[in-house]
Length: 91
Picture 1 (cartoon, rainbow, N blue to C red):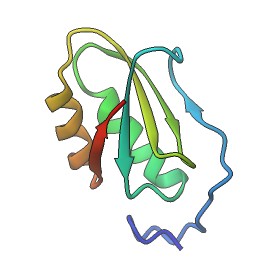
Picture 2 (cartoon, one colour):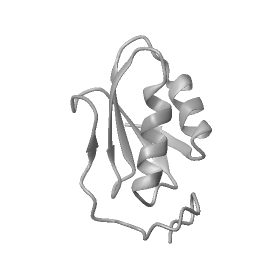
Picture 3 (cartoon, one colour):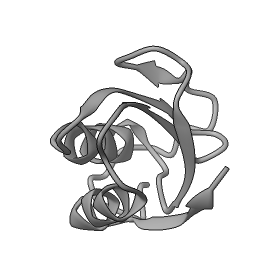
């Protein structure tokens, strides 16, 4: 069961990355994501940040690659926190 969002989804550690943009950009580490619902929440909130053109989430590693320009790390942090997760760092 997803403990981060309590959605009741079984934890999935083998899901493929969710791609909504190119694979190059700034990469962040997000803690607490455990299922597809978590991925959707984080992707959706980051996608609302001005200048973001794509988000690619790798659930098994907790990495999130954000494409675009004109956004700040603090805006990404705020979006991740709005989704209910924590930005653990930037690669």
